[in-house]
Image (cartoon, rainbow, N blue to C red):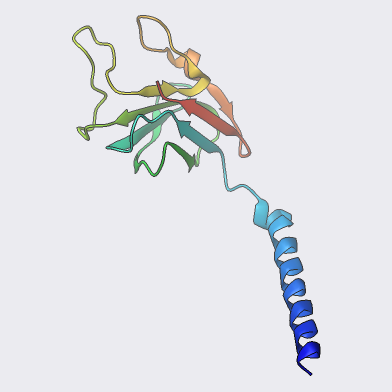
Length: 142
């Protein structure tokens, strides 16, 4: 009798695994909830990450601050369209991007399109990128 119970239990377990696999692979469950921004290049996990999203006219349409869970993080953003995204690691928690005497940033930062001009800040036009509901963006802080 115990052999029969083991077989029935194994069959039931396999049925549950198959059901779970079907649910995970179905389009409704796997559908992305919006554009995803992957941020990497954190020197450490101190402070917070600050993100600012602007539209093609330069108007800030969203800005948020998040704790840094690991050396790479993923954030779902709500906006779509032509956007410029700016990110920096506020390591000391003072709420602003710290700069050296000549104005060069001393905290890690990055922008959409990975623009890094030599002796000036990136322009809005350089940062603008087309963001759709299934877009996956990546910003490497340096």
